[in-house]
Structures are given as structure tokens and as C-alpha cells.
Length: 137
Image 1 (cartoon, rainbow, N blue to C red):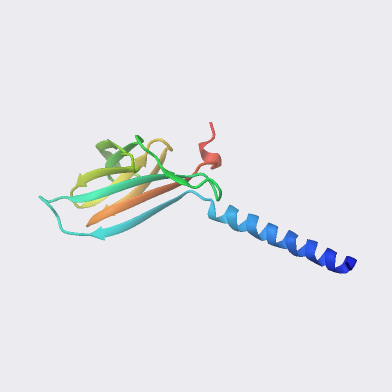
Image 2: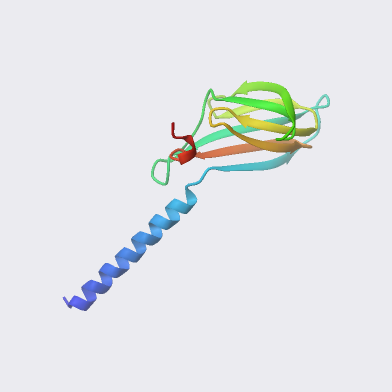
């Protein structure tokens, strides 16, 4: 084979490898998403679903976090009072029945919080990058 062809193929493999590492690294982040599911009030309350997922990286997959404490506060992130505590089930979901308003969700396992305005059935999802430097003891 021609040395130039081999060198070009090696360069192509190196570029594809670097691109794959970059894409995998950029997609491996801790995120919190918020979605209003809609629905009507039942006895003056809506359902707030809080889901915790642990992301083990591009080759490790994702798993719901079971038996994780989730604390719910009434009010904003800056000024709030304790409202309720619940634990996630086997699917990683904690369920709260709340009146419309502003709440602060504390994912106690990871010491992360998120402010949410509930005006319908709502889903909050924490997708944690397992190797995130913030969670290393």
C-alpha cells in the first residue's frame, strides 16, 4: 500500500475518534428538566412528579434512583419553608400532591435544588452524570 494512503487513513481514524470523544463528553452532563403535563385540579391540588435518573455515561446507560429522599419546600429558592418529604419509588419517581404555586425541590442525595411553578400536573427530572465532579466526596 501507498504510505500516503495509510497516513491519510490514520488521520481519518484519529479525527473520528476525537469527534466521538467530544460528542460523548458534551452529552454527559447533569441536567434538570421541567415539563407541565397539564390536567385538572383534583380537590384543589395538582400532582408534582419528581424523577431522579443516574447517567453512567455513554456506555453505562441510565438507571432510575430508588429510595432517594426528595424534599419539597413552599416558596422560592431564596425564601422557602418546608412543605413535605417523600422518597423515590423503584422507577425513581417521588409523587407530591400540591396546591398551585411556587415550590423548591431539593434532590437531597445530590444536594441540588430546582424552583418550579406548579399550575398543572408537573414533571421535574434530574438526570445526574454519575462522574460529575460536584458529587465526589
